[in-house]
Image: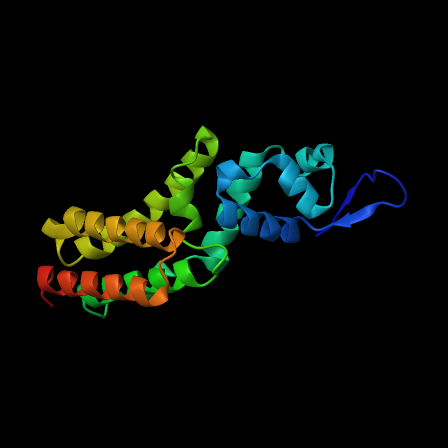
Length: 196
């Protein structure tokens, strides 16, 4: 789908909202939500701020669309990894290793876009990121609770805390090898806590 954006001068510029969301995702992931301005996004998209507001209503509105795109295309595939036929600890260890790979995949945009967004200064952006994060935690909790109900909260907190640490370490320069070493150590702890 394309939308005509009023030009500054000359012929109308073709504007693809999906491409714009992908571009904004790169900016938000690289710099963090709070460090990206509407002017930054507008410049990267080659549009003026009124056109930006016409297309997205607000920076937080664009960020919500970015989070949707990230979870659908670039996020960790929780539903695929949390296989009810595999041991719980094994699947959770796979989640942590997938997180390490995702968080180190782009050396410019490290860490988790969602986790980093949960600390945003903007209440709307923070709420959107926290809602997506809570959804992932609920998937993990429900998965653990199906076989280890008494351990569901404790194990979910451990996995979530480990993922937050992996994201923070990726943002601070840890490469894939170090992130994977941490994920694998956490996987060993999970195997000890959740016998098959």
